[in-house]
Amino acid sequence: MYNPPRLQTPRLNLRPFQLEDATALFDYASDPEFSQYLNYDPPRCPEDAIAFLQLVLAGEMGTNLWALTLTNSPTVISAVQFNLESPTLESPTLASLHYEIARPLWNQGLASEAIATVLTWAKTTHPQIPEIHADTHLENTASRKLLEKFHFHLTTTQDHTAFYIHRAIAPTSPPPHP
View (cartoon, rainbow, N blue to C red):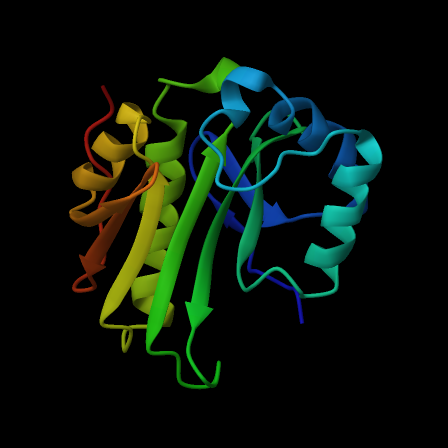
């Protein structure tokens, strides 16, 4: 069932996606400069965004996938996911972190804010998870630095992807805002 909890930061709301978010999702994900770093095909038309959101709402895109909005706007600007991975979700043994943010909002600390909030929530809600995996495009230097800021360690690279791991320990406080 798709129902991530609502979370909030001083500048962001993390909430479940809604079908009404399709236009905003298409707008930011179809930006060529943004999508150059994706490891999935961006939506080619608004109908692709609707189809993706239908899968999300049906629970077919993993667990805990949040739509992010600025606190003063209902428009989706990005997404973050803490996906529980194990044979049974009742006792997850691994998790993965995925995130993206609309290009006009890059370099404003919003991804840091969202990741800190999600990691703190995860470590409180799922303290038994020993490690968290993440990956990013090898050439996405900002994303790689962001993962390293949160103590993710590079494990390997393959093709155009850098793979990271984080040994889950105490709740994470956000890094200082630049």
